[in-house]
Image (cartoon, rainbow, N blue to C red; front, side, top):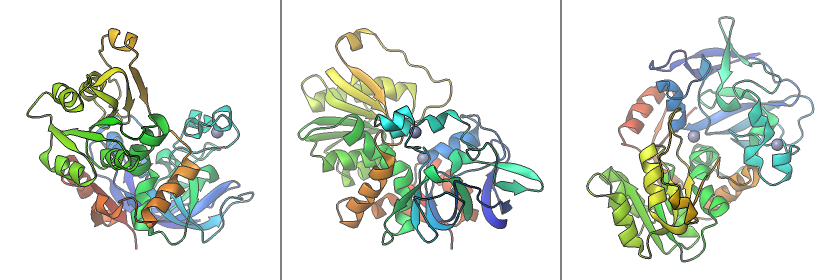
Length: 366
Ligand SMILES: [Zn+2]
Ligand SMILES: [Zn+2]
């Protein structure tokens, strides 16, 4: 057993409590990691606000990078000293999903993802078990994870930057090349230009989309969208985004629309922005209970509405690939980081996120 400093959610609508907790030893098939950094992602906030119900108390954080400290018996893919990104969706490599090339849908998702694979916790405080958010618990200086929840990465990549690839970057960029398979010259609409949507925009640019139309209601985010490769911006607080996107795209609408907000309204707008036969990919996480209202005629016109989990590709190769693009100077990651904070400032980092003040904050542990 050792100790870790962790940000713990005890009650919804209450600040995270940053405190010392006990960390039990890794068991067979588990890995103990010293987290170096964790990106401040909106998904954790859904638990803090109660929009997504979750067992409490829980150590939050699911966008982490760090160094392996110890491994349990039978662990073969990493060893102490290896650098890793977290994989908030594990891939077992053995189930039907993994074998058939859809490891982001792995059967391990069917068991509770707030404990280790044996159904028990490794964090404890005053005799009470603490849950591990998505088996990652990145808002902790040290954590234990199932082996499939860590992805080995190159050692020369800065961990306080590439932690972003563990969620927001792959979640935003992956749908472009994995789900939509956007071809050169395509027209693309992106609803939502925060820390995830900017990656959708950036990857659309990288694969050679001709028109990249960015939609948001915050002027500053539209400026960011332009920096990351948008060719046109639409301020949905001032004009009807559907009509504007259709007009800018020509031909009845965009080939591909990406929804990176997570609301009924923006998902419906994204679908309506595509021309007949166009494809919409839902990336944003909607609050529990969200429902859509769309005319089925849209789909008789061969529009496709689909979604994406963790980039919808192969997380164990997509994460290192995106890090390679960054290290080669072909992909912007540092520019995504508006500020770095200590673990004790994570609550404040969420205030700024909600105010639309930051692209991404990163919590960094010394
Ligand atoms: Zn996330
Ligand atoms: Zn699997």
